Length: 161
Image 1 (spheres, rainbow, N blue to C red):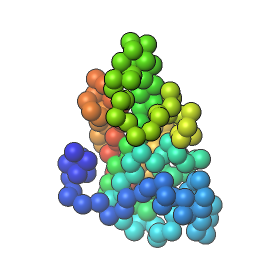
Image 2: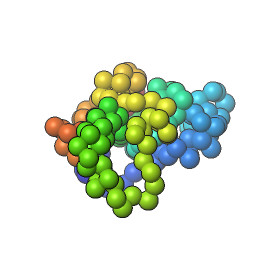
Image 3: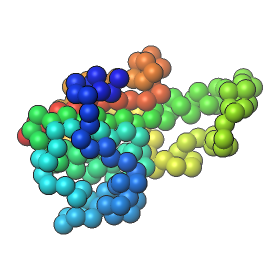
Image 4: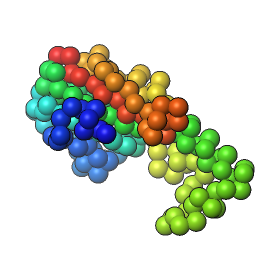
């Protein structure tokens, strides 16, 4: 589905938590400026950043860097978990007594709330939109698995300059 959103069968850059950490710890960093990714300006046609932004200290800085490394007209695809909805679903399943049935084959004990264990930020669509800089124009928003129950938000952006 993401390849269809991008309109291209491959992705040139895939940002990961580990990759961002290599650039300077728990947030985007390193390079010649604080927060700089180790790539030239306008170096890429495509950037894919999935399930990363909730883990970095300054997600707005990470998205600005994505905009910087994109060529004009380049495409960025960003995805984040919809924490509030995920937490509501978990709470409802626990209250109904269905949590153990759903999670009986899980390899780890999932925390009640994902933001309790791993996530520094609890995104919803408004928060994701708020960190997208003017240099990136949102061209499509998709709720995954579907818009009525968006456990993940996926946003396609094009670099404007």
